[in-house]
Each structure stands twice: as structure tokens, then as C-alpha cells.
Length: 611
Image (cartoon, rainbow, N blue to C red; front, side, top):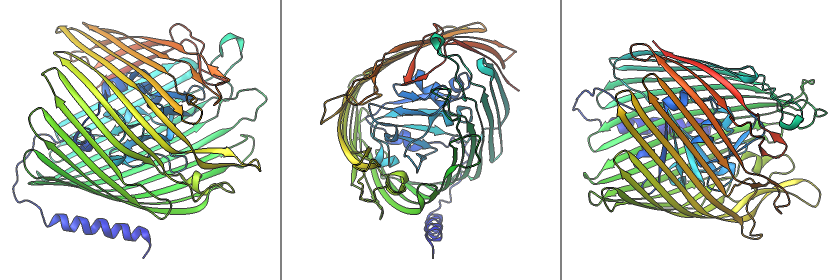
């Protein structure tokens, strides 16, 4: 029997065992929301930043644009719309976990996600959690995690929403969302396409962004069926296809292009069985790319991986104050590529978590996780979190954890360079959070420390070939702070302010130097004021200096950006909205990757309406 069939048998067996425990009581619910419940349940001692769907729909579609102005994550972009990788709390791009409806979707090839390949129009909510999360979400959750969620609601409704946006450099953004819920069925459909000539002028007469055109499209479906009050089925499917011509540094370079196709499918059965709640999931994640080193040639390199994930999640309410949770997961991946050959791996993991509400103001949680695979050694992981509401307006948060990142396909199998003996990256971290809430104001500051060992780096050998190895030990510490204020003056007047600041030290233990492309300072601000039908708003961003060489011989200066927007709503229920925005209002000349200039002042206009 092959491994895929073995996984299916495990899942079917779990479903049969769970079915025998069904409750006979029936009580219909008016509305059911299914999303990443785990994020809410097991984030004790950590702060979660939530970005609503209304904010997602009013910004540019790439995830990089949203998070850059609304989080402390620093992004390296090889030019507008090109490859974008994050640095969260001073870590590397592959140390940020990306979670799609509870499933880790970091690339099997390089362990990270290109944030410019995510169209935000398909999601109801995006959440950001700083700090360790490997006990719950597995590999990569060292610096933090970013969560995409599609909710399923059974409240009767039928809604269409269309967003049309046009901007500088012939940039076209089209998004359509359809939501239908009736009786026991729910359907969410999202279609999106984004394209741009991307031929902006570099500052200072440095020329034009050549070979930078791109387009992408995505289709998302979330289908829910309520069998009865205790049992719900959910199916979510997402397909993303894109084509990018990578921008040139010099006109003499070969013109390249990159095609990628990602498909994600998730089937879930949720059952509420009195004191037990169980979720049985089966996910199929496909990742495929083709890279053309010269657009004039038909030859290309490629990579394809298919991952089958079976997961069983069981909650048990021991009493009204104690929640126990067990998660069992098996992930089988088969990969093939020009430079990695044909390889597979099977990873089994088990986690146990518990949460205890000691009093109305004090709660804690603890968890353990262990993975088993023949491809590498995996450590025993742990987490511990505490929330203590000292007063009505002040909450103290504590969290400590051990986290990890597994070697990728490239690390293990790259032709003539892969290292099958490489170890997992490991992280020990702790944080102390202080959160204040007074009426319509909320503020917080978190201090953290992170010790990362066995960090994987690719370095040249004596033969000149680059190979991966466990090279670096890194100490990271700093703080993150935020301030939110909402004030309603009247029915037609509302003010909103959202500010954040992060200070980060991320040092190589051996050299005591800051890691490259990790700024010491980052600050963001979002201000909006709605009166009658008008909503002016401004976004600001400051990224501090970053080093581009490990010996600190080269650096990129810090920069300040501002976006100014104005929206006008129409209709009896304000179902029509017209808006425009000036991006990089002060025409700042900046780059966040060496020799990759970003555009100066540019504009976009949109119309958004529901019917």
C-alpha cells in the first residue's frame, strides 16, 4: 500500500470513530462562522493584529502593500510587483509562517511565501501574530505568522460586490465577490485579476523599469453545508496563476520571466459533540513554477510539489474553565524539479494543548508538539502563555516557546549542492506584553527576546559551489508597540487612528553585527476621518537604515512614504463608493533592495459597489 492510500485510511478511520460519538440533541443556530478558531483559542500571551475585509478592499491587491503600511513586518521587494519577502521581528523570510485557513502553506522549495503572489481580495480577514507558533502551526513560525481566512456564514443573504481600479503604469485591478446563504447552504465566490505594464521611471534620470510587466488571476470558492446543528461541512478551493517578467538592473541583461500556478483545496468536517468538538480536515496543496532565463528561448527550469495533508483536531471541555486540545497531522509531499530530482517525504506530527481559565482575570495555556520523519531530526517543541488582567484597563501578557524551521527541498536535494544531513533551525524565545484599553482607545507594547540556533545559510565551498549548512547563531531582541483609537462624533462623523512602532536588534553572535535587510526602526500610521459621504485618509511609513553586506560595508538609507486617499459614498445604503489615492505623495526616491528602485509618486482610482 502506498503512502497516499495510507493517509486516506487514517482519515477515514478517524471519521468513523468520531461519527460514533455524535450527539442526538438538535438546536438550530441562526449563524455559524467557521474560520481559524485555533488562532483565537491558543494565542494566550500574544497580540493579534486583525485587518478587516473593508480595509483589504480599499487598498492595492498585493498582500505586501497591505502589511507594509499596517504591520511591523519589513519587506524586501525586488521592485514593484516583483519578489517580496518578509522580515518579521528580525528573522529571515522563511521564518515567517503563512497559514491558509489553518494550513501551513510555506513553499516546499524555499520555505517562504512571495507576498506579491497573494491577492487579498479573496479573504474575509487577514491576521498577524508576532512571536513563536510552531507548536500549533509547525515549521517557520519563528518570527511570527500571517493568517488568511475564508469564513462561512449561514445567515440568509445574497450579495454581489464589484471593485474596479485603474492606476499609473496601466495598472488594472478587478475583483468580484459573490456571497449566497440560504437554509443550510453557504457559498462565497471571489474572482480577481491584477495586471500592470509596470514601466515606471526611476528617480534621478536613472532610466525606466524594464521588463517589469506582470499579471495574475485568482479564483476562490468557499462552500459550506450545515448537516444539522452539530455537524458542518466546509470546502475551500483557491487557484492562483501568475506571470512576471523580472525587472532588469541594467538594460544589457537577459530578459527573464517566471510563471507560477498554485492550487489549494481544503475539505473540513466540524462536529460539536456536547463536551467534544472535532474538526477532520483533508487538504491538497499543489505548487508549480517555470523560470525562463531568457524570454527569447523556449527552455526553462521547473519545480512541482504536491502535498496531501490529513489532520484531526479534537477539543474537550473538561469543565467550563479547562479546554484540552489534541491535533494529529500527517503530511506527505512529492516533489520534482530541474534541480532537485524527484523526492518525497512523509511527516507525522502530534500536538497537545491545554487552556485553563483560573479566575475571571487570569488564564494560561501550555502545549507540546513533536514531528517524526526520516528526512531530518525534529526537536520536541513547547509553548506557554499567560494573560493576567491586573485592572479593567491593563492586561499583562507572557509567552515563551521553542520553535523550529525544517530544511526545504532546496536545502536537502538541490543538485550537486543539497545537504541531506542538515539540521532544523531552532528557536528559544520569550516575550512580555502590556496591553491597555480605555473606552475607544487601545494601546500596547511588547518586549521580546529570541535565540535562533543552527540557522541555515548557503555559502560557497572551496570548489566555488554554494551549499547549505547550519552556520549562524542569532540573538534577536526588541519591542513592538501599537495605538488604536476610534471616535464616533455623530451618526455621520467618525475618526480612526492606527499607529505602530518597532525597534529590532538582530545580531549574528559571532560578528555582533545586525543581519542584512533588518531595519532597526519601522513605524506606520493610518488616519481617517469620515464625515457625511466623504472619507479622507492618510497612510505613512518609515523604514530605517538597513545593511546590505554582512560586514556592514554597504547600506541603504531609511525612507519616509505617505499615501493620501479620498473616498465618496453614494446610494441609500451607501452601496456605491468612488475613491482615489496618491501613492508616495512626496515622490520619495527609495529602494529596499539594493539597485531595485521603487516608483515615485503614482495614482490609482477605483469604484466599488454592492448590489
